[in-house]
Image 1 (cartoon, rainbow, N blue to C red):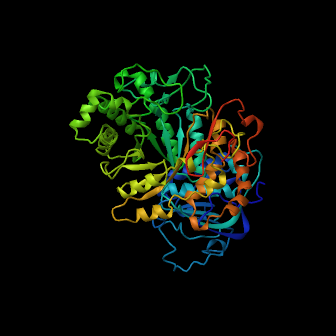
Image 2 (cartoon, rainbow, N blue to C red):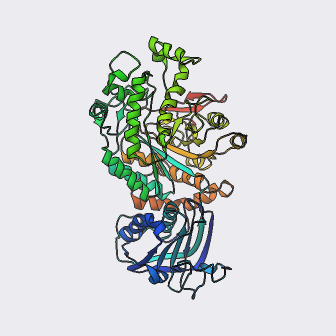
Image 3 (cartoon, helix red, strand yellow):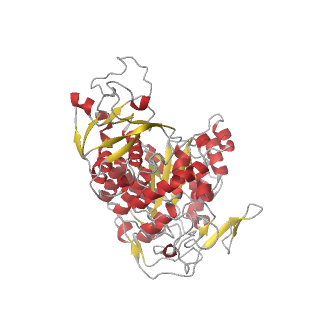
Length: 582
């Protein structure tokens, strides 16, 4: 299938105009790269050099006109947009693939004549930013066939590309995927592998979930016990949060600050921004195990070995606020993202309500109830980040008019919470659990490994639309926030290995990528299904052990691991589905 369907692109571009011929890149490929787009060089050299075995020779000045691959800066294009032209020799100054160019001679020239398509031009990639250029290289990678997805060339061969013009840009500015490395640690190289694969699907945000009850994964020099104690647990629950099984195996790991800087730098070369998450004031038992004085309760706690909802929360004292402010200072020094996630989800407030000091604090602050301390706590950390030039994002339990409008809300509990946040003036990232949690089962029945949650088939993920009619109406109201985009979640309680993570994520993540990149009016499941076999062959070449379309292979199943499948009944209530029904 290597060149059977080179134009079966995923995600589907906004405009694709095929030509009639092909272009051959020989052993040596000359490359002219405008300096504004230097950031695309690592990816371009990986695809054409490392994977396809071409020897790349950079050229500048007058020689740039004769380069076989030209990467041209055009500031008027959309920020993440690109134009890719692949054409054979068409005569001096002729446009690629027969595209009519009605500009005069002056408009076709710049200082290095890089906008003139001459006899020897073969591939011209035009973009406004390095990120847009990265997207164009990813399209070029698909056009080059399966060899471009293997780690190294298998044989001496020419690289043949179909003549084509692609003009493309994303539907949404935020196209994210969350990777949970707190429940199960993922080694650094595997995180970068995951980023590379996300970039191949033109996703541009990795939300890295670095802390939870079951593990703290980031080195904080001010508080070394966070990793000395908080980064490992004695064992892990096996299966769903209701399972009686434990593996008896210690589990742990953490990233040094240099590890994380490396991850951030690698992601930047792939057009991906890494947003770190430090989840507070719930989901924090690993931190409380390391520093018991952080807890709102009185019992000393271990790093948690179970999944599910945790009954323990952080204290809301000034000392705890200062502690996590210092944590955020170190996190913000590592990560260059404009946004830092501070969690705020699933906070059990029982310990707040039964702690006399916390009850008195809420009264002194003039809050209506202790529960309002969640917004106050998150707001204090948001103020700290804002003073350092960053925004924060939170899960949608942190909401209401008391939360500063620059706080981004990750809407996970349903459309209604996103609409409420928009009307309160917050920008929103749509992350809905019952559409975009890829750890949830991909089909009805019990054959899925440790089946949990509701069913999200690949077709249902493909049909996902971040901006429903009701959301659009809310966003159009005066003073409302914006829908920035959407994010798929890969929570990893049940996904201890990269193989299991691949199975849960793909090919549904490919369907999600098209849902957030390609215009909704042009998306068509039948057309995606036609292109999907070609794309699955790419995943095969990459070594991604995705879920087969007809169900898991025998070794991908976990028949003795108890899940907890759910479904919605006729009244819309979430109920247990012991037979795995949808």
